[in-house]
Image (spheres, rainbow, N blue to C red):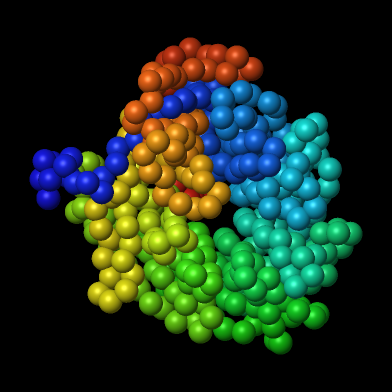
Length: 387
């Protein structure tokens, strides 16, 4: 495919930067973004073991949550009790709850000695369970009283990188691990390995990220640490597609740099379509449609985001809570963050009269521009090592 064909393709939409915030001029990696539309709050987890809060509309800096002593591996506003409560888990072995109005810690759940926590999820048939993925363990608490009620130690033999309660069947939990396995548990009753492990799916390599999609959320997409993509039906534990050479397949569909990694997947429930978001080490991103039926293909990108980042992008957060790929005149497309320390807001409104603008929050410490040229390590999903 030559450049003219790509530029004139009616499906391709190039997006522009609406705002960008440089968090301390690149001294921090951005790991993950999470939002809560009800309170108009955007949470940003950083490599300095802190979480900063911003207005998603204006980029105004609200404050920060500090307390973790290890890498923050996941953040989420999914707590059932309050829209103002943000949860985070860390390699320090804790899950902490923060009140975003005061930036204070309001609760803490701790794993065993020398345990790290890589992922967490709220669910259960009574909406009372907090599950966490740890070092070869899955830990359950009753979040209402903070008591640990179970610890599964036999289903995985390596770090549990993801735990997710299924959206339409909250008693089912899916775990994924560096050991290459994804396990399905029924969490009703007294949870144990012997009686509650329902099925196992063998991915064959270390699993980095999973997500649900499909009309009844019966499908599961899986991204691995070696940048492969697979699609599963978790209800019968069968694989429906396996893209072992996903990066090359995506790279062949555009004329920018080679796709070096995948950031995430995105699903539109309106038209039942799945995209995989690929990125380059230079900071460009593309939304590549995934056709997982039949022979399986990764098609030409339908959105391209470039010019915002100068390094590996770690996270992207769509603006639409309905998971609809934005079209012309909808305004904000989403936000992204990466190893260059930049938080970028992307515009999908090509007709806007507002100029693109880049600015620095006055609440952040401004440092010399030469810090922008510091060496950046490109590890999209690995643990961050000291430089």
